[in-house]
Image (cartoon, rainbow, N blue to C red; front, side):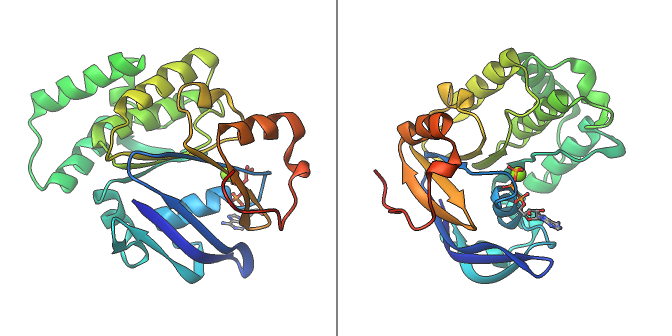
Length: 249
Ligand SMILES: Nc1ncnc2c1ncn2[C@@H]1O[C@H](COP(=O)(O)OP(=O)(O)OP(=O)(O)O)[C@@H](O)[C@H]1O
Ligand SMILES: [Mg+2]
């Protein structure tokens, strides 16, 4: 589904991602773990098309197309969705207004008010989200965990195919993490893929990754199965050195 090849990214003239390659196939859950400030969110923003991140070289292919040539709107219409590490607040625009507009823009047809209402209400019930969220400003005044829930509400309405979870688990209480992760597990199918970025292994209980990658100094230095994540939890990132075998274990 998504293929990153030899990607180098600069932020304000500093190289953050250095010649990184990463592939995520249809129906796969891939995890990316690494120390703070190493470039995990940078990768997410480059995939989504944030203009603050300068792609110096390399390519990203999405379902065979050149992702880097697409603007943010096109990427979103093609089914890419980022659950942001720090979701932004949009004052004065309610979830309902934003989502109806996004849906109409995506499908090119007007949404039926009653059907839309029914859909969003059902999603709130499923995700254990108060219905008052529907008419609240997008992430406005919400707590850290509430913002993450609200990101999932938006995801369920827009039905993306490639989902990036940039620390979905940070800020969520244990029960909410379980509800949201299990909802995502149910959402998974052969043509949906998830990239999970996390510092903790709890989310893997519900969304078990096919592959775990460790990123350090701008590149993937080790890849393995779920056991690699367990090892990281035990030993910490300092146990993994740049230059280690990059092959999957
Ligand atoms: N817009 C920006 N302006 C300046 N520096 C930036 C910007 N975005 C990222 N950086 C820098 O790039 C580096 C990588 O940041 P990034 O947010 O990708 O880290 P991360 O791996 O997601 O860390 P964390 O685990 O703490 O979320 C950091 O040193 C950060 O300060
Ligand atoms: Mg980050």
